[in-house]
Length: 129
Image 1 (cartoon, rainbow, N blue to C red):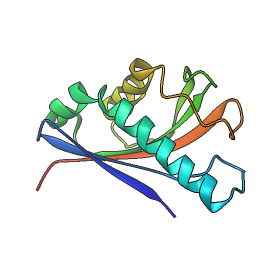
Image 2 (tube, rainbow, N blue to C red):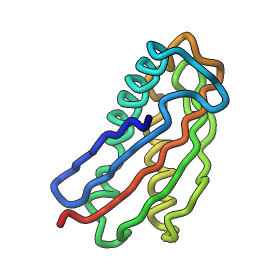
Image 3 (cartoon, one colour):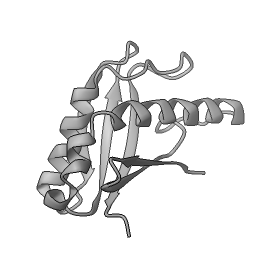
């Protein structure tokens, strides 16, 4: 099951973030899965505040989907951000990576997950139709 969050900023462009709700390689209960979705929603909302320049200048960056891997320490510090799948537009990929770094520290991860936590975040940017 994929958790989805539609993030509309400034009415210029839309970013859709989705993430597998469990940490990579872990089998968890339905309750834990729900907690991971809630955590991902918090992270998405937090990072969204740092995407405003990217979305405001969407005409410069264009549309595309970038998949990033983010490692988060127990205290919420971003330890690593890596583009796993490029959008094909280097400025869009770079802007997403920089937005995540600027958003550090993120909300602290739930207690039941490892340290560090790895999130895979597919982000799709599209112009409103």
